[in-house]
Amino acid sequence: MDFLDLAAKRYSVRKFKETQVPQESIEKILMAANAAPTAHNNQPQEIIVVHSQDGLQALKKCTECHYNAPLAFLICYDKEKSWKRSYDGEDSGVVDASIVTTHMMLEATALGLGSTWIMYFIPEALRVELALPASCEPVAILLVGYADDAPSQAHFHRRNFKDCVSYR
Image (cartoon, rainbow, N blue to C red; front, side):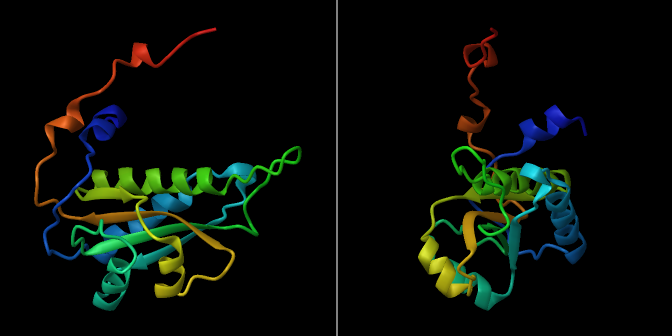
């Protein structure tokens, strides 16, 4: 599939089928994460695969946006591994984890799976429920599974790219 077609096809799923995602698909999504570029190639991402019933129930304690997905990835970054700019200390971790999540989301789409990127969660609850180390900063929950809905028509509304691009 052409990349622009793939990017346009992807939408946020709000209803998932109960069907489990095959391990082979999970591994391909994780390989896409591993291929993602990160600042200074520090690769600070830490990814927790949540697919057991206990894990999914724990996740539900951290966000109301779970849509009963059969699989979730918690994408974090290790604050001790992420690159920091020398002149102001700005940390690349959130950007790195976001790039990783985007790669995963697009690979899921290429595999015929639906996904939803969740940022609406309680970080401290995730730390407790999923026993995250102190250096692990949660950035995104990526819900994945087989879609049991159709894309909202709002998905197809896009700003004209000429309205958000300028040349200098």
